[in-house]
Amino acid sequence: MFSSLKKLFHSSEPQGNNNDAEAENIMQELSVLEARLNENPADNATQKQLMVKYNQAIKVYAASKNHRNDVDEVFVKIDELRNTIRKNI
Picture 1 (tube, rainbow, N blue to C red):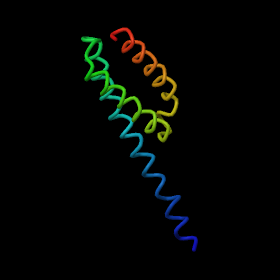
Picture 2 (cartoon, rainbow, N blue to C red):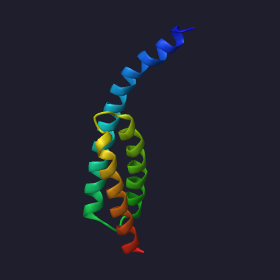
Picture 3 (cartoon, one colour):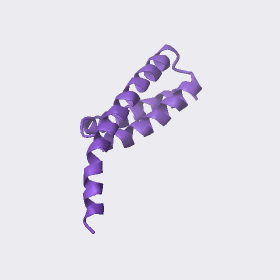
């Protein structure tokens, strides 16, 4: 009966490491997309990709102990991106 609970709790440790690795990957992808958007702020495709990655980053960062503090920064960047999109419309 308790073996399933033990598996659940012990399986959460490797998942935390996986979340950290995934957070690092998303952070690198965000850097590339942000650099591309800085070069051409009117690029709609980059804006869309960046918005999708920001939304993914929120979920992954919230699940990662090492990146949990970065969630607020992502929300700020989403607001900045929305303002950029509004200026281009």
